[in-house]
Amino acid sequence: MCTGLQVAAELPSTERAAAPCRQFVRSLLAAWGRPAAQDDAELVVAELFSNAVRHAVTELHRLELRVEADYLTVALTDASPHWPQRRTVSPAATSGRGLSIIEALARNWGVIPLASGGKRVWVELPLDEPCHNCHGTAPASLAASS
Image 1 (cartoon, rainbow, N blue to C red):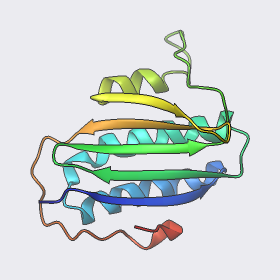
Image 2 (image 1 turned 120 degrees about the vertical axis):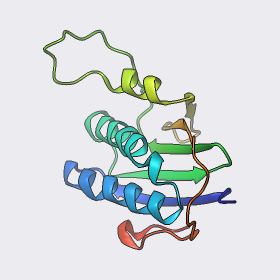
Image 3 (image 1 turned 90 degrees about the horizontal axis):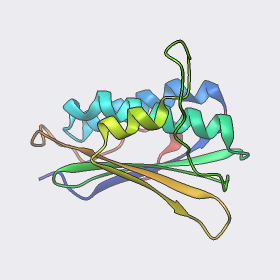
């Protein structure tokens, strides 16, 4: 079974890195035999990453993914001490729904403060399907290390 697979990648804090980051997650989950998790994971990573780029004062963010038997953990570490905050937004607002999206998709999520003053935001996404065609390898893009 495809459990215990994990990978981490350092990402530059620029909006240009968002698209390669999403593609990396999609490719990784395909390689890990979890194609049904791609859309939700890609959306969660996009929300975490865009919030970190917008609000964290740091040059790099660390993205981590780990597959267990029935869930995928997505985590993003940044140097900001400020925790994500739920916002009340108008229907016409074009931003501010990130935590609502994450809570709708996740089975659990949280924030771990780091001794450095930053934080690690983690999200557990349910995996409702068995592993298909698992290779256990990570795509080479984003200079990831597994």
